[in-house]
Image (cartoon, rainbow, N blue to C red; front, side, top):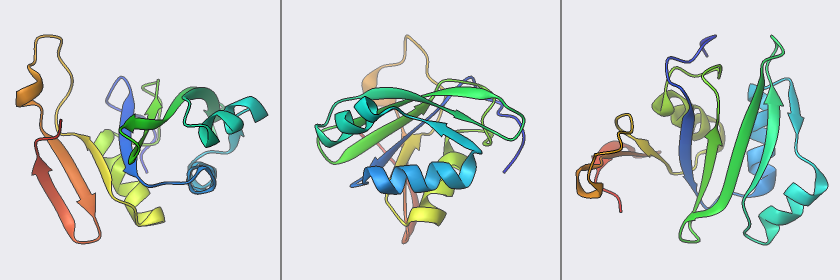
Length: 136
């Protein structure tokens, strides 16, 4: 992992993940995790929630988790900070794939307001490899 992200934020989508798997992965990446019990209940009901993580440098990062971000198959994890351990979405996704062996998707490029949905490209990664896809 690197020390500072070159992106403003990091967002990844993980197929069929449990709350326990998310918490285990976050524990391997951060020194402190702060999700209250209501947040944890929300996950089991398919509701989005926000919590916080901290790294070894005490950078406090807001984390938005949406268990049903893309239908009921994908959970979105959005780190709302430029101070994550990853340089970009793809290195975060690779960390999840390596640790959890789950299919992960992330944007292949940064977001722009005028970009059409049809032109968005995504990285799809699983144990078979990585491919560029159109998703949506």
